[in-house]
Length: 164
Ligand SMILES: CC(C)(COP(=O)(O)OP(=O)(O)OC[C@H]1O[C@@H](n2cnc3c(N)ncnc32)[C@H](O)[C@@H]1OP(=O)(O)O)[C@@H](O)C(=O)NCCC(=O)NCCS
Image 1 (cartoon, protein in one colour):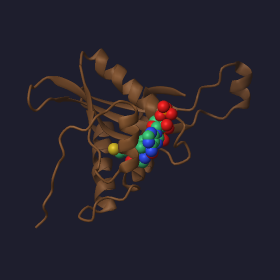
Image 2 (tube, rainbow, N blue to C red):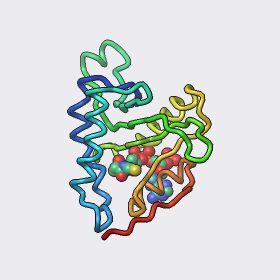
Image 3 (cartoon, rainbow, N blue to C red):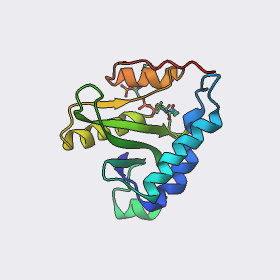
């Protein structure tokens, strides 16, 4: 598996994969459609008007190693992506990395793609001088929370919502 910066031709893959971000089942006051639309809006903004504090990483299946492999193999397959931002800590104003969006294709799930993307995000963040990487996750997305805790993240604040 290789992780690389996104190119313009990754746009269809990223926007097709964004539906994965609602499969966990949003809370009753949040529709899957609005979750997907919100994530797609952010990703379209990345391709249309990129900001220097953003990065989009794509995980590809490994590139062919030899010319014979090149002749025999299909093009690397896209497995997942991570959208990264530089944010400032609310309390200290210190800049830190933030994984804004992370999604792995259904076919590639459970093969270490998220772990590889998170490690690459850590490298991106450290290279910018950050001392922390953050992310938000829906409270009901138990699987993603387990994965994040497995790779070393710990919960901090909990956002409460009261709908009228
Ligand atoms: C959540 C998601 C990104 C995980 O991606 P993935 O590529 O399947 O995850 P990985 O295979 O890298 O697994 C990550 C690690 O968590 C571990 N893990 C997986 N499920 C676990 C669980 N229930 N409890 C504890 N650890 C678990 C894995 O064993 C792995 O650790 P290892 O490398 O030491 O074996 C993926 O399921 C996904 O895209 N889901 C839909 C979109 C989504 O919900 N994104 C998150 C939005 S915040």
